[in-house]
Length: 84
Image 1: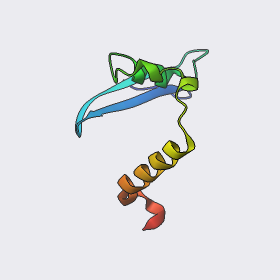
Image 2 (image 1 turned 90 degrees about the vertical axis):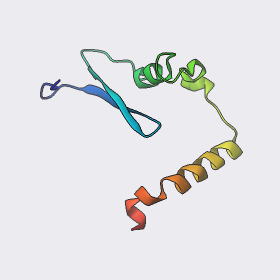
Image 3 (image 1 turned 45 degrees about the horizontal axis):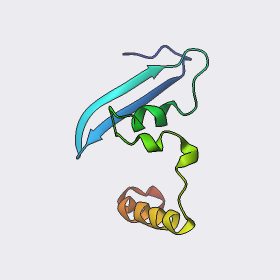
């Protein structure tokens, strides 16, 4: 599908266990819920984590946030273009 010029869209590629699984594309017409991506990806059909749909319910402690940030830094270090 080709998105018409000057149209907004939402696009996600799905990779499961390192294997390409598919893509989702939604052309935005009119008002668009800001949490659409979260609602879609957290749904039972995709990630099955319905408790993560409402961002207000996804609070973690400062210690958990620091651990998550360190985990991210460690695992994505090879992709960090600012460190090369």
